[in-house]
Length: 311
Image (cartoon, rainbow, N blue to C red; front, side):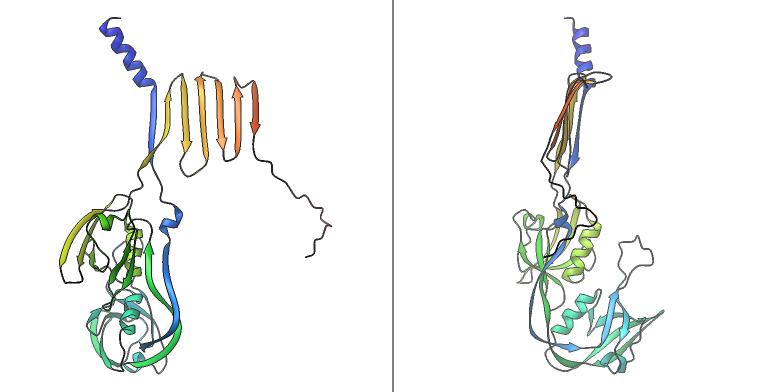
């Protein structure tokens, strides 16, 4: 075989070869924000506010404006007496930022004695401060112990005394563990911004990250050591979904679905042999002349319209 003919054969084989790889999806449970809770007597300071996230005007923006928006003020509560009204943006509570409702709740839970605190509010374009005389309440309710992210971070977090996310536990494949984060570390910033509470931190991570994306964190250890970290979000990798050499064979499968196909002798109109799989069902074909299927036997309940069943 001459060099030119050899090269032509190699080129034709390469041109006839097809393959494809697709990223493996994160299982749906990985996207869920799980949490551990406990129920029991608990005491916390009472302010009398209902708040929500201060959303950006652009609904597609991932930027979170500072503070929480006041949606309700209880009559006769410390907040009403202090002059807080619906529509105000609560920027700070006792000098600490309140960028999500859970952080405000965490700060209230840390107070053990009745006291007065300074609230910083934004009302329109004006920023004001007012004193609120908190009262203590004894309650029996469900309390969050920690939140779990099974997807991009693969770690569990709780709120520390400052309302910041603190690492409770790390999974074996957690990118945080590979980057040097340890249980007890506190997340000070995420992608250069205040992470909010543990729930808000995980919510932002799920909204903004894709598998393999770079994560920028500032963390501080139990002894005060501050570190700047750059690591990659968890990436499940890719898988081969198609491989073939025309006209000899073709193999395909669908990621996330129990489906696949294998063909031998790929002719223009038909295939010499074709095998398809869809769950428990199997379909076979020889030259499209001889075809048969196999599958799981399903019992169907065909009851008449007048049939009744009583338990």
